[in-house]
Length: 86
Length: 86
DNA sequence: CGGCATTATAGCACATGTGCTATAATTGAT
DNA sequence: ATCAATTATAGCACATGTGCTATAATGCCG
Figure 1 (cartoon, each protein chain N blue to C red):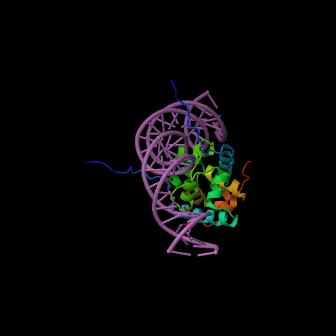
Figure 2 (figure 1 turned 90 degrees about the horizontal axis):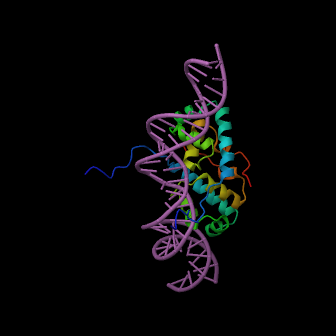
Figure 3 (figure 1 turned 60 degrees about the horizontal axis):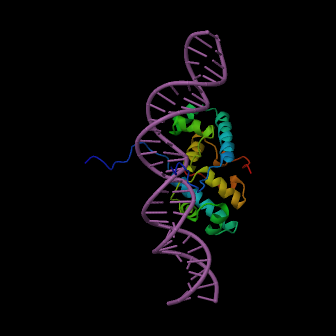
């Protein structure tokens, strides 16, 4: 049969970049002294979402990242203070 | 009938933040001397997507933003060098 | 004004982000 | 090794990001 093929148009999922961000978030979360659970609660994001981001399973939206920055009370730039791979 | 109601769980769409980012992207795109069309072509993103981002109609993903930063050849931080509203 | 480039909208199909809930796996302290 | 806290996975439903194509609106220069 013909199917099960994925569409051929390539969507954007930058695994390397997403991993770099995951690392950065974790670093800052720990530095600011939050558990994933606390961060989830205080931000209003779901715990599963925090975990998925830190394990680089998803490609979060800007709004989500903005929420994280506000909750962690760090300048937005801090979350992006890393070298973007390739 | 009962429906047409939106789900009550609130998803994240940070209109203010998204607008601030839209502005920042446009500023940098112009400074680097790109038209939306060129940026779309060189990045591999669709032109409609670029327009939707700069008019703050959508909430882009990190991967999309990473692609933009690479194409514009600016450090990631530059795209986030603005004050996050509220 | 006319014509061209640029930007903005729109609608569809498909892929995926997000919340929710539950469960498993890992870690740390004693 | 046990117990508690923390982190990671999983699956569902729903909302929405993205590519594509086409068209409209705007800007700009002659």
